[in-house]
Length: 392
Image (cartoon, rainbow, N blue to C red):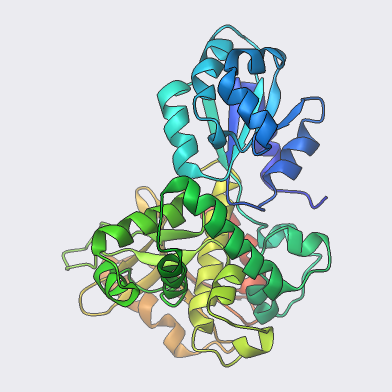
């Protein structure tokens, strides 16, 4: 088993709270992690039809079997179970009694907020972060973007394209129908592919609705479905405007670049070398890695972007209140003066000198201007810097 960065945090939460919810996309490694960390606990898969029926029809009788705790996998399938769990947790003083996993953030949080608020800790587990795979993956960034980070692709030899096609189909047939009754699955699949074509772009729902052939309300609902299932996320613009008009629309990204590549019908890493979406996909990779770094520590994402109405932009703003740390992302391998334009503008605008650039080259440079240039495979050094509050 590949060691997960979230493992120690999950164990720590289980020592403090009576229950812990581990949530994330399907196939992100949740079940493998909890079964390895809590081998003494009975494992209950609530996607099993017979087990689920028992839990739905006789929740008290079902839970009586697990008086000493259990791992409840895909618990969002039996939302009424949480009301009965509340009584058990209130009558117990044992930490880490139940470990609950789920791949549907909306359904799980809705059930927990109604019954277990204040009794349970949350931890989000996304597919592998690059540091978890650093000794197992190629140094070719195109191959990494194409393959993505889902654990099954690293556990056994699989056809990458075929695996993603099956993943997309399974997701549509199972999760989408569970969340919302969508009659036009063809339109929904077209919508997901159109989202992939907007990776790294401002999310214009009206334009997306027009191309999909549905109304804005439907697009808003479908965006929510993809977010709840950890397929996409919206990177929010930072609210601080420095006396300028700023863009208020979020940007659209995928939690995994391999899935985005599959939806874009990219069929090999070699295609990425000249593909028009390579820059957006590399940007997607860097930003998602920053989010994984936070989620693996049970911290909320503090990642934003900034753009004014004249086109000046910072790819990433890390909010380390009261300071903001700017980061630019460049998909080229050669450091040029153009890489620094955005940060130079930010310096003039804010009076702050520190910042960073992440690029696909292999040379780390610490410039006298206060900007550090990081290779894409040395982002852990950047995380170390971000763990300290910048002073300027």
